[in-house]
Image 1 (cartoon, rainbow, N blue to C red):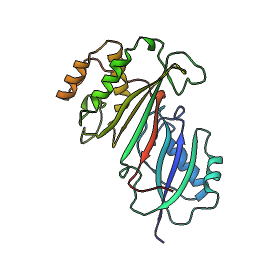
Image 2 (image 1 turned 90 degrees about the vertical axis):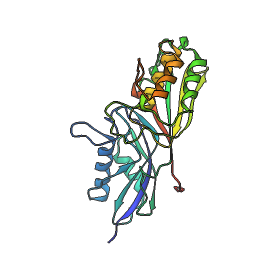
Image 3 (image 1 turned 120 degrees about the vertical axis):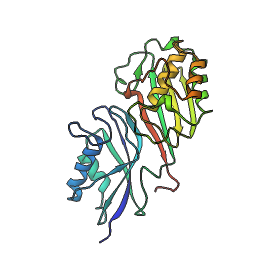
Image 4 (image 1 turned 120 degrees about the horizontal axis):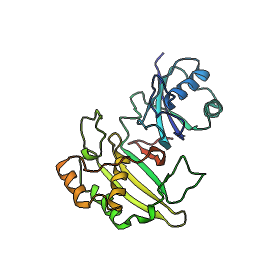
Length: 252
């Protein structure tokens, strides 16, 4: 019997996990999901995710696919959600063509990075507390973000141990939104793909520009020459959310 391919939409809070991908000596989201699937489907299932989020990073929207010979049991999503920890929630599952791939066919990915100026015990794991955030030059961090939209390659914002074959990314949005009521700022960025550690390094660069630690001219020079910045900052993972994944087909 030929395998059927299933697409799953889910969300997760990454605080207690060592990222998406399975690892030998640490708990990952992929591992927990595969164990949950085994309990219901009674066979080993390998899931393929739309991307590899790092330790502590969250996903408001995430997609995975897996293959299974039979029809999915009734009430599958609700049954699996009872098995999975509260940090992971399945939203829907649909059968798709056997060639559809959760990672390689995604054409759009969007992230948010949340920064709060005041300590808040209710957002400890989801918002980066920056006590001197009021010192940021908001105009400059917006300029730093906008500057990136004029480039196609992003070597200065790729972790040094990356195995990426190309530094090219089609950036569609890079913008800071200021929420005066919450005393919070949120960075929004979207592209067809991202390099390893790219979003956290970009946020760190914007903060360094906004605090006068590096200049916009230095950023421009690094991008023109595709070289490392003199001062590089990768912000903590817990403020980062994967928020929107899109495909060239409708998932419903």
